[in-house]
Image (tube, rainbow, N blue to C red; front, side):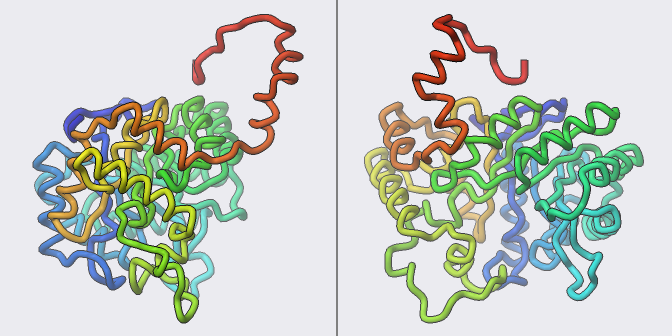
Length: 358
């Protein structure tokens, strides 16, 4: 596998690299990112290897990520697939500066285009579901942006599967621009998405893009049990240390450290790093076809993570990682797999199941 071995993004014909470049680390505004010179080196390394799928958002490093990306993309904008997001606040105190509604969407897109120095976004995600805006308002807004040419494709992130299914169905019924991408947290420490979100994405034609594939750094082996305790509760902000961010978002737990230990053991046996093993596991997940977003603070760290593209985990290693990270199925999935319901539903008939999305 390599960055120039492209994949189709969901139901679209858009061709993207199997690993996206994350830009949340572009800019030092939050205290732990890369400065402009290092961010440019990371960007250049990705593009020179054939990478074309770049992920950003309106609020990353207080807007610096988009500004820097716009500078780096000059002269090669057309070969890039730039994905940004709207929803999160950039102006505190303005009640309509955040949210999923049309005013927030249109303002955010205009601001992103200005920072990026471009007249269109290849992909615009709704960043997170706000529980207040109607699905018709969101999908009509996406369609208007696509028809205007300011956005080419629509995507969605961090939203319940049932809401996404409503939105995709509405778009199909009304002939509006459909959703083609789903961005979700997905890693060895976050596999609950396999129960609803991944089957939904496969059935409805959404390409899966995985954020935090290294579990906020936990899967690299950089943390221990001593990092679970802190003198004061960490403040809910993207600034500060990466450890605090991992604590705030629930990535740093006893369970995740246990999984990280097994990842480290597999990595030692294969003479690779824990980060490479964790990324290779995600790239080799059956059916999911998930494309991890990989960011870094240094070029060395980024190139090290790219080496996961060359790692094919043996079946025994995959089985060990699957077992230690498994998530118990929830209702109705557990009930529907029980012998009695299966027997009653089939009446004893043996039937080859149809593939999702067919």
